[in-house]
Length: 114
Length: 118
Image (cartoon, rainbow over all chains, first blue to last red; front, side, top):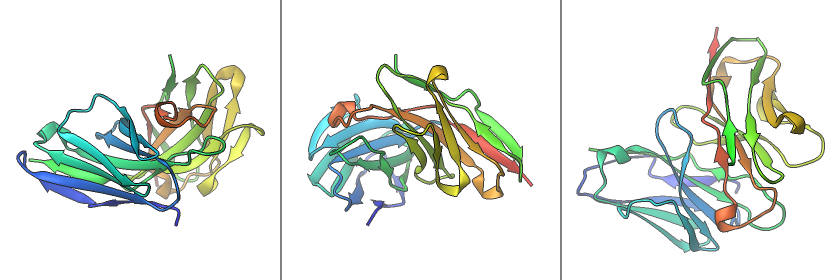
């Protein structure tokens, strides 16, 4: 299995809702990433997990809460989002042993906040 | 400062014509260089990567890129563009060592949108 999967593909939520995004990989990668991507922009790094521990939080508002329950799974919990949080949310993973290697990206979750 | 510059925001080429997308980088250490492609509403797919060795690297879908250290460039090329190549292309640079956590991050250029005329 050489892919990163993300669910759901699309999500529409109100500003008072609580929802979660899920990312899964079975490539044995021990670094996992959440990115936010607005239209016509490059991906913007949000969080990095290394060996299931949060190693980077790029000053992301607390209404976004990441979780890495095991080495294959990465969640992003959403609560009280704002319309400006509407974007494509991408998950990625990377090998952490041996020489540097590329990040593998999932297909993304298109989030719309009403 | 570490950065990646893609000077062309939008390029339009005719189907069958050749293509070159430019990428320049500024990086303190030996960089690892990548080109990713993104179709609308999709994730990023790796086209090719350069770590070391031969400076001309071949990728998927008939793409190639040439690393020129003296020019700090890693331009992407394709001899004959197909309509299905229309997409957004991102150049990215990563550290030359396999750092975990904070140091193992990619720096992306702003992207070049490729349109293909029939």
